[in-house]
Length: 336
Image 1: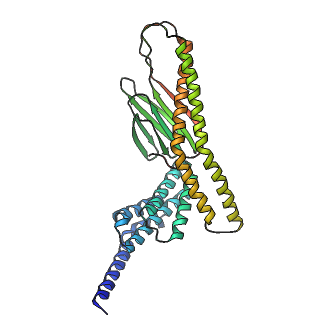
Image 2: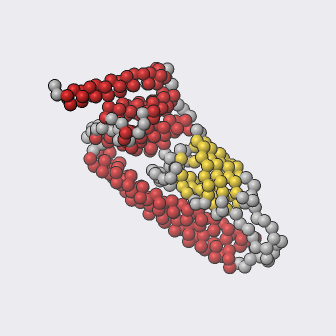
Image 3: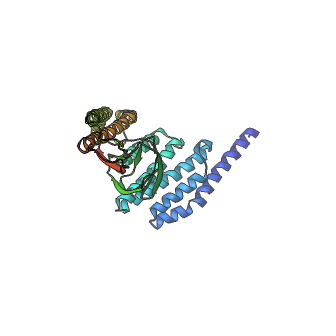
């Protein structure tokens, strides 16, 4: 045997042995947790071991395969935990953790077989549909710091700019701080597959006599027009995906009728087109939500100003938080 062949043989054996030893020693606690039916803890354990190996792009083929097994085992452990959990918020959290591990498995290119990649992509879509992420849009007309706390979730946002966030459905505590105003604290509930707008705006009345009736009318008309445009944008953004979704459901039904175990080529094509269509429609849908929120605020302001425009002494107007709930289609990828 030539010298290069010997070196290659020794290298392969070393890598294989290292990977085998690694999987045996580092995952032993994880496997013990599985035996004790501590599935969520086992999922976190597998995730921790996988993270300790570094990014998949820097690993050898052997270590890629090993890390992939860790992530898949972790995801399956979380999904197993879902079966034994009855609390909706906990179930959604476990599903999202499984979703994260599956995404890392694909993003780090640990999927070495095309068929397996397709199965994981189908699983991702199924889990996402089961979670039914909600979309929260935060709107403010001056600097505001918003603290959002939910089940194993805590995030702080600074406004403006106004943004939309994709979150698990459930109950959240919202706290907002606006300069010169008392803190705002309330509880909000994000419904599954729904969009919610939380708006924090301030209005300072003129110190002069009552404003003219012209301004409220202009605000009212402008608000109705902007809200109408927002609704039209949301409808336009969702129409293509609804058509593709119908086609995908039909293809899926045909596949089940033909007893096909894996997604067909037509299903994969439709699913890719559906995901692309939804992703492309997100900016337009978000713009529609913002326009609808602004239009609603303008309309309400016009009505209130029209009926309350009487002479009064200059005073500082209180903070009026607005809460609007619009049911719509699921958004598959938005910021945060």
